[in-house]
Image (cartoon, rainbow, N blue to C red; front, side):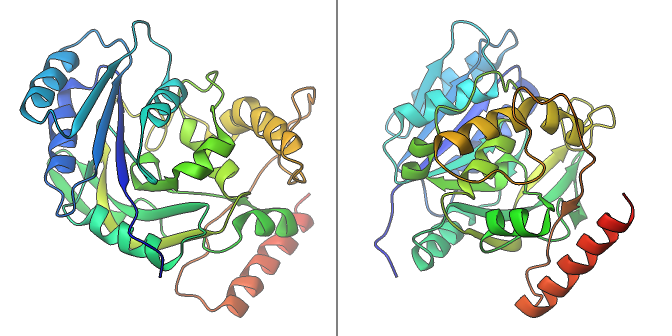
Length: 293
């Protein structure tokens, strides 16, 4: 077991006033408080800044408030917060989601049992209106060397949304800065870069809530094609990162000059499957995918 790590909670906000206070309160009410809580506002035009200023005044020793003078997007928010952070672990929260009270306590304990992780994640419960639904965001979560699985079985790994993610700051420093062209879905770059630097540790336990509402950018938004967005926006930037760090490119990674977009398949191995069964399932999916081409 490793030493106890310090934690920086990171919340990036743009015009999230409707749910922002609840998100902030969910950090302040943790059974294990973070050493610091960095809130980055991306030039909001609603009442977000007023909400953040008031809560910062009440918690000056905990909260660090950073304002972007111009809107720059989610990746820039991640970069700004990570650069200002002092914690060993970075825990991310979207301004419309929330954490359950024991989230940081549970995740810190897990991180101490697997100190070399590249990415740490937990499941999220769907929050619709004021009702917590029984269904989790993800039916299963990948564990272990997800990067090697991606390469070997040509299947694209899925991860939980931002509010269920934690990385070591040392990992973020190897990845960052995240390309600021990713004004949304910066977590899709962060996760798939982090898995090339260490194994994934996951828990199916829901330690927070993902809010489903009409303004969701990605998950739950029927107008958002996650696969095409990945290929056109995230994939070229990942290709550059893998090339720069000397890592082989998985099959579904496109170089910036590539004009051909392929169809992809997603995978989420269930945590409680034995390794042998996971491999059998993945092999079956691979054969199915090859026969359909």
